[in-house]
Image (cartoon, protein in one colour):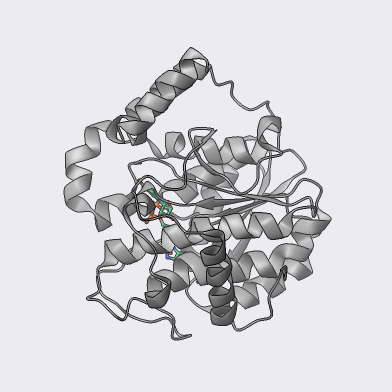
Length: 326
Ligand SMILES: NC(=O)c1ccc[n+]([C@@H]2O[C@H](COP(=O)([O-])OP(=O)(O)OC[C@H]3O[C@@H](n4cnc5c(N)ncnc54)[C@H](OP(=O)(O)O)[C@@H]3O)[C@@H](O)[C@H]2O)c1
């Protein structure tokens, strides 16, 4: 193994060194990351969920800087319009359509899918980024625990519904933003909806993120041969309104070493645009390198667990299996 890879692997073990800004800066130096070529996404269409704040806002800007037309998908038409106006002002072109969708409502996601299938002829990049942590357990309009609804089932319905567009677009890439917090939890498939134990928002979030990565692996298996790739990435720890609001103690303690949102989304832009990322599918990335799916003994999900999870999410989506496979 080469020296940068050895140093990177050692850094990964430290967690704080890896997830903080230190990890980002060191890896950029070690591997001599080149910025994506100007116009790398010119003529391409990207879609970002949760573009109104933090990482989604930064990802929209990064993809726009590479020349993409960026569809902004969020739950507030007003906040989306403000982001669109800011992007138009920065990039000097009106190539940022807005689509209203609450990722926690299946009807809302389906309506957005219907709209997109009518208006779009291609979809090169789909960034599943919207996310939230809830202090108390509550259910979506579809009777799904809200964390699971927003982080897992809504995005599943979005990707499923947009498959026809993705499949017709050569080299389409789906990028799911997960969290290193997922390493801390084992997914309990017998309690997917968090009803059997006292509710903890951060735990439900970490489990939903673990489920998201398990679904990415299952999607990749089922999409093999279609030309569509799907990967997860986690951004490390980035200075965003979401982090400040949901984990205030952690945010205050770590603030000096948090990544900027732009640093947090570097791997999203790389996965979206870099030729070196084109073949990857079913992996979990941090800082442009695949990382392990598990770090804590006893948290691993087997292939049959992943298939079981897939079937459970299909059932929760209330729609036929979008990619049936034995
Ligand atoms: N920041 C970090 O260090 C960190 C670390 C690991 C993973 N992440 C992940 O990165 C992603 C972005 O997080 P962030 O830190 O940028 O958080 P943020 O600042 O709170 O932004 C969250 C975005 O998600 C949108 N959103 C929330 N609930 C939604 C819903 N029901 N339907 C549609 N959109 C919804 C928000 O839209 P509104 O404007 O409508 O609220 C906002 O645009 C999340 O998936 C998060 O789990 C972040």
